[in-house]
Image (cartoon, rainbow, N blue to C red):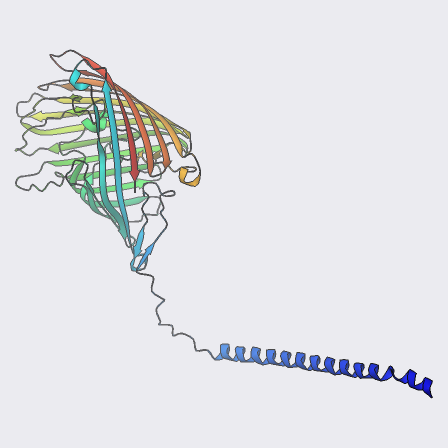
Length: 453
């Protein structure tokens, strides 16, 4: 009897534990089933709501775009845009791009036989502020003023109508104060010329109005050619007390001999102007040896009684990847009441080679120079682009009160840290001849810091 009790004692607790485990398993299965049922009911409710959700009326307009959207600067991908961002308004139909240029120069001259010409100078080639943008698909605008001479001077200020700005062949009509289209360097913006000064052809073979005039310009262009025709008066100057001088001008170029990276450039430009009878003088003292040294000028003397003038110029050059060579020649014939037939003849040949960072800074559509698209700017950890340049140019006056002449050789370097930031250096060997004075020569070194936004 005692032995039976000892055997039965451990059996009763074991049976109790088995019953508890079975009850726990039943409870887990029950809760799992309830969770599955809840998931099925939730899915059914969501499906019902999606089916019964009312659709938006077809006439409801889409959500309005933000009033103004600040975009990432396209300066590294769109030549000429600058560092400032583009602002969009009215759902993207109107764009506004603030723009400006700061070009600060230093110049040092030596070697001249005239002591007053040997001096150092600092100054600003340009301090400009303005804006450009578009209105819809067919209208564009540009406004710009220069403050470098401590006074505000209006430069570009126009509205343009564009037929199709994305087609292969583009047509544009500009109305306002317009930058003239004359030669490769003459048609290039001051911040994109490969040298610190435009060549003597651009500076000398131009009408009395200079680089700007109020009027109308029509432009048509293809991927490797363009043509312009313009009728302009005097530039904006606030003086409307007399008749303007009027100029008819045009230019065309073609880069179709070759392919997209190696091609020959051909171009020509011309103008004819009718001078206001009240024009006091056609005197033009041209810079040589840089812009800052005002003692280095080729004078023409006071040329009175001008009635009209005609200018013609030709262009021949080529581009091969990082290398470019460009020659320009021009002549301006002036008619006066005395019929002395004064004239100006100038020619120039220059070239450049981009050692690293990009190709030649040239635009085939406009036939002019531009700031290059860099492989990698210093802002992105690269070295930017380095270009070496050289140029020879010469000018001669004829039948003028002071018929001087001169020539210069320029050696230069351009370091583009970013597309809109450039450091420049030019070393110029110059020679100046004036009637009745000994021939003079010397050298001028110039450097520039350039920021475009």
